Amino acid sequence: MDAIPPLEMTLDELAEALAPLLGGHAAFDGWTPRALEMAASDLGVPADRARIAFPGGGAAMIDAWFDWVDRDMAAAFPSERIEAMKIRDRIGGLLMHRFTALKPHREALRRALATLAMPQNAATGAKLAWRSADRIWRVAGDTATDYNHYTKRATLIGVYASTSLIFLDDDSEDLAATRAFLDRRIGNVMQFEKAKARLTGRGTHRPSLSRFLGRLRYPAR
Image (tube, rainbow, N blue to C red):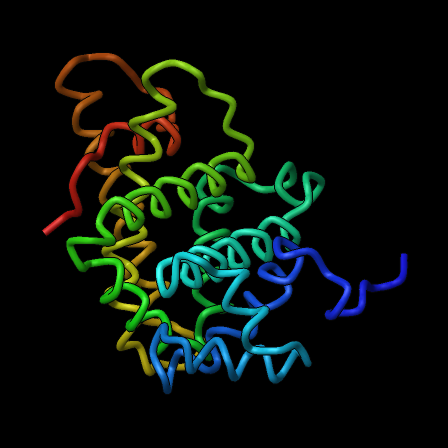
């Protein structure tokens, strides 16, 4: 199918097309009208029309950008790839893919998190965090509909947030420090569950990471 010319796009299509361009400009100009104007110029559309596509201002721009990150992740992990992976590798792989995609845009991410931390944007920040966690679990193959559905996502938000703090200042090759921290977080969960299983006498079975992540509510210290 031929690509839709930018000037013929609907506002929703325009917002989606602008989303991947925003990070490169937000790194310098913040999540501001100036960054949106520069992205619109890159795409070849009038700045006024681009502003109409983002009536919510900076928070709406961040929403679209995070949505692009989610969609990029999902496209990189089709079902046949996911099904060939263990659950630990699924979660770790999905998170590391996101960090790798965001590596050139760390300053834009830093500014996005600062914007979402403002009181007026707190609800939007919580919504976007939950949406990303839900999409990660869905791509990973999770089909839980009971309370585990909620605890898995709440826990993943904590894992993602704590690892993001390392990622933002990670200058190691191939994000080795971020990868090592994430592995330790997952390892801590597994150790916790093994110890719990011994104390409760429930088992010699190998731990399930999906169950562990559903029970770990706070980042390890």
